[in-house]
Image (cartoon, rainbow, N blue to C red):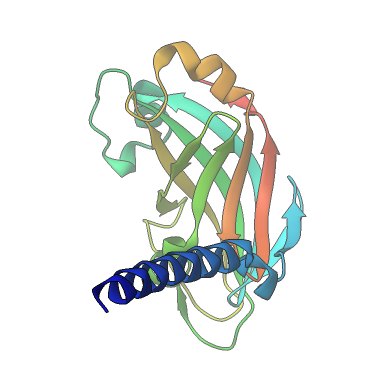
Length: 192
């Protein structure tokens, strides 16, 4: 009788191990990404206009500036000098085409990110309305020139990699899923 219990326990233990192994194999072969289709890529380039959350946004240019260049060109932003920090500046023409007042800073800006490939940079920026005392609220049919500026520090891109960084493909992402909607810039228009 004791001999029978030892065999029975070994048999049950092996069945449990084989059962767990089969479950792991089945789960490992399930591709969860099949449930979700790939996002539709909607890429726009300089001069193109994209409609996003009731706004028409047109990319004018992308610039690369150091602290002195930012202070000289945009003194109202109040940037403090910091060693090794530079800036990516994207100029946009923005127009409200919705039937309500839109605050660009709270409704649009939190959804925007700058991504650079292949260097591996991602950052969210700050916005500023040119020639309008920083007012980023858009009334009906109002159009303004807006800049979004992104800090590029040594922690994000080291100095020795900046040349390759400036030749990267930059994506100003608005949404990633179900549509990947972004402006694509092939390198930077002007440097420092």
